[in-house]
Length: 250
Image (cartoon, rainbow, N blue to C red):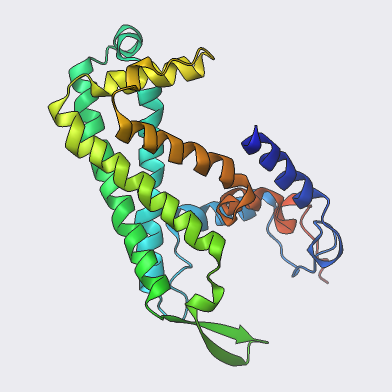
């Protein structure tokens, strides 16, 4: 419920913003690209991150962001496979429990490790006193410590993400190889949530899983209220949300 309210709140504030930040009031440069080409450019920036190094060659930001985001995305896709119990996967897709376990171990373990490495790079970059360059009127450069742009909500988000990833990796690499039924146990519990018949009995003896799930729920509830909502803001960007400005040349 908190998540849904947050999503509605974000969308409403984006759409109804006034003044210089409003969708139809913001000052944008003239351009010839339409909605399609502009959207493609934004998606390239989201998935390839090619603009992050910038003129200052901030490779730690680029490498950390690339590894963290792609690791998280792959891990999230893998979680979709865990939602469905093994009996259904085998019946519908022919995916045997043993193959499901192998995929969870190697694909999930690799994705989690990549995400953890990326997050640690970003954390190190944030707390080691690194400075970033801020340009003023395209003429002056000011180097400001990154910590000045770090607030309590940033550290809270990083801490909860780090805990979720570490606990997830521990389960993937430390429990799954020695407990072939572990993936199916998680699936049966998650399936009970999806079907609106919650049953905690399958996970009652797995406190690590319970803490991991609790942190994930806290993160999901917090997500729309935080800066982590930024990937979806591009849908409401003025240069995409309104028609392209037509320039007549003679």
